Image (tube, rainbow, N blue to C red; front, side, top):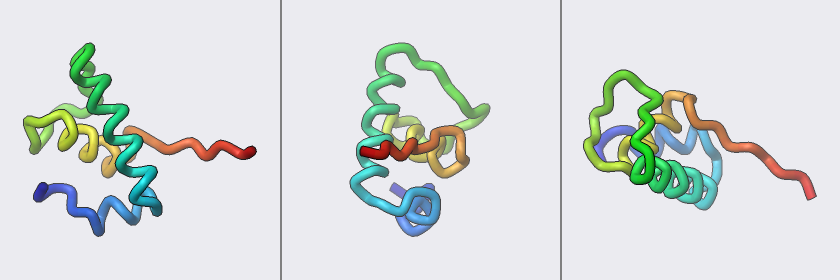
Length: 66
């Protein structure tokens, strides 16, 4: 994975666990209905596209308070 780097992604989401969870969920959505949120992607794989969306701020993490 070249873009975006893990260091850049960690500035958007501070937890690697949350990052992986959100990216995996979005990648599964891509497989089902191919609904692009960006105009152009650098990656052709679903996980790479999901990470690009997270880095660009299209996908956000909601904090759940218990």
